[in-house]
Length: 311
Image (tube, rainbow, N blue to C red; front, side, top):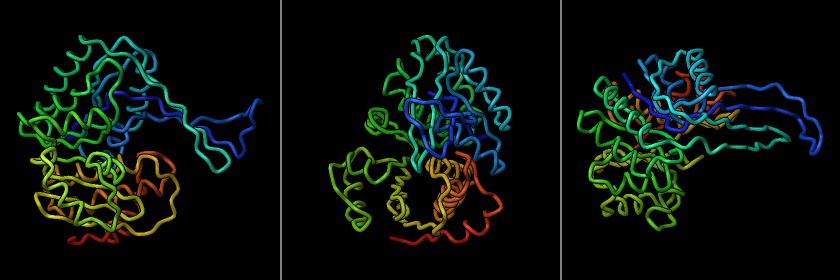
């Protein structure tokens, strides 16, 4: 079983209008999805045929509705209930643009967090791989992901961490490291205090090798947009390039990539297959209008077209 964690899920609501009329009525038809990065990961893993359980924090009527949306997507779930109302996030697609309105979400109490950690620890004991994705809600300390990584490591379960800011900083500074982290090129430059481009990958590899925060992390995968991604795995560097496609909706492609990595790592795949599977999933998501969803009838075409080479 692959366990996905979404600490701050949301009812993702998409409105599409050809032209947004300011200070007037715009009639729309909503498309609602169980949102949050970890739930995007979950949807893709279901498509890939994995046994998946989603966990995290859910509250109020919105939380109950999120459970219904997960049921509709075929996602098994065991979330910890909280008193606060789970959030709603709105994406307004208009005039060729995407405007997002993101609620911050509920405040989580110390008692609620303690109950979640107990639930998580029980689920980890049954898992073959864990993904930790997205932001932490208010009231949850920045070192929470580091604590969850340590619990999984004690159970000898690999952990894929996809977050940023203080939560990522705390996980990198912790004694027990995640199995995989996936910063983008901007985020890795911020962490290192550098300005590397996709043409500076050997220098990036050298910088990571001497930074103690990355010691002990088996996989450091750096996404570079149209330039593909580069993975540093146990001292070995691999470059991946996905085929050119017509992008329909890139939202959730990073989450889909994490799902592909988790799918391959849980299956014991070799490093080239891990990287190829992750990049194929990210690409297939960008070809689908639904977030966290793959155009599966294109799987063979895209998977075989992903180029993986040594740096």
